[in-house]
Amino acid sequence: MRIKRYIFFSLLLMVALGGFVYSQIDRVYTFEIFGVPVTLPVAIWIVIPMAIMFLASFFHMSYYSFINFMVLKRYKKDYETLIKSFAQAILREPKTHQYKTTEAKNLGRVSDKSHIIPQDFKIDITDNRLKKPLEYLKDITNGIYVEIEGFTLSPKNPILVQNYENRLKNEPTFSGVILKNCSEYPNELCQKALEVYIGFSDMSKIKEYAKIFDFETLLKLIAYYKDQEAQLHYQDILYILQESQMKMCEKNYLRLAKACKEVLAPDERLKLFEHLKDKDERSEGAYVYTLLDLEMIDKAKEYLETTNEEELLNYKAYLELKDCGKNYPLEMFAQ
Image (tube, rainbow, N blue to C red; front, side, top):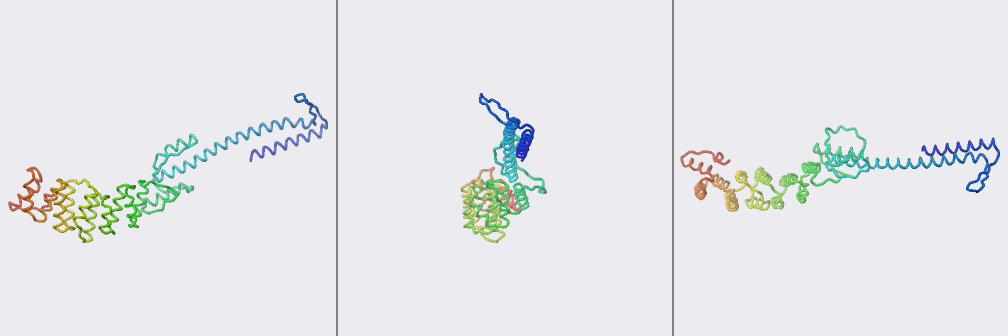
C-alpha cells in the first residue's frame, strides 16, 4: 500500500511540475545523446531526471520490500512449526522439526525435546492448535476418555496409555483390542487390560493370552475365581505358568500355594505342586506347605527326609514341634 502511494504521489508531482514549467516556458531544447540530437520541450527535460530518480528509488524500495516479505514469511512459517512443536510437547510426543530463523531454532531445540506439563489448565489462549491439546490433556488427566483427532501418538505415549486406561473403565470389551496388539503397548497397560478381560471372559479365551500374564495378574485371576466362588483347574494355572515363562522364586511359589487353597480342589492342588516340584526345585517349599495344609503329614515327612539337612528347616521344625504335641499354626512357618 505504501509503494502504491509513493508511485501515485511521485507521478502526480512530475505531472504537476512538468505542467507548471510548460506553462511558463513554452520552448524546446536540443540535447545530443551519444551523438544523436534529441529535441524535446524544456518541461520534459525537467521531468526526465525526476523520472530516473523515481525509477531508481522504486526498484530500491521493491527489492527491500521483497526481502522483508521473505523474512516475514520465514518467521510465519517458523511460528507455525513452533505451534506444532508445542502442541506435540503438551501431548508428550515431541518430534524434531526444521526451523529457518535463529530465534525459532533456539526455542525449537528445547520444545522438540521436551514434555510440557501445565501446572493448571486455566490458560487463556485463543489458538485452537494449542487449546485443543490442552483440553485433551485436561480431560484425560481427569479420567475421561477422549477421541484424539489431529495428532498421531505412539503406542507407548503416556497420554495415550492413560487415555486407554480411562476407556477400559467404561468399555471393558476394549481390553480385547489392547490384548490383540499387546506387543505394541507397555506391559503395564497390557496387564490392566488383562485384568479387565478376566472379569467378563471364560477361561478358554483368557488362556489365549497366557503369554502376557505376570505373577501378580495370575494371583488376580485366582482371586477373581475365589470371589465368584468358581473352581479353577490346576491345568489352567499350569498352562499359564508354562506359556508365560514366569521367573518364579520360592516366595512366589508359596504365595501361589496359599492363593490356590480356596479355588482348587485338594487333589488338584496336590497335582499342581507335584508337577511344579518336578520342574523347579524352588517350588519344593510350596509343595511341602501344600502337603502339610492338606494334613498329609506322613507324605510331608517322607519328602523332607530326601532333602539336605539345611533345606526347608522351617517345615522340619514345624513337624518336630508337632511330634512333641505342640500345635502351632502352619502359617507361622510358611513365610
